[in-house]
Image 1 (spheres, rainbow, N blue to C red):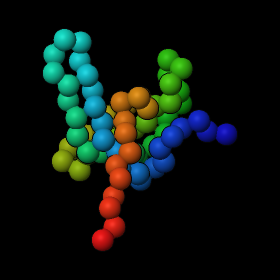
Image 2: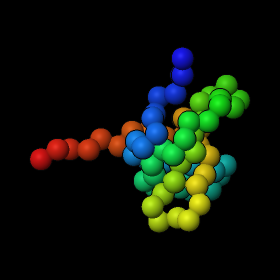
Image 3: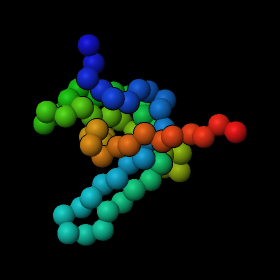
Image 4: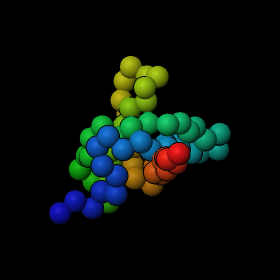
Amino acid sequence: MSNHRFVCGQPVMFVDKRFLGPSWSGAFVVIKQLPSGEGAPRYQIKSTGEAYSRMAYEHQLSAVVEILR
């Protein structure tokens, strides 16, 4: 049983807080669930504006809530 909170294809917000510098955030889509690293679930995520994907820990992600009209 997976302990991942997000599923493939789910839109998420990514926030990367650097040591003393500013944080970086943006909208991404979960591409793949990865094996846990350092005791936390990990994901491969991709932004539509980037040619590459990146790895993110679950604590760096939050779900995007879409409002239906």
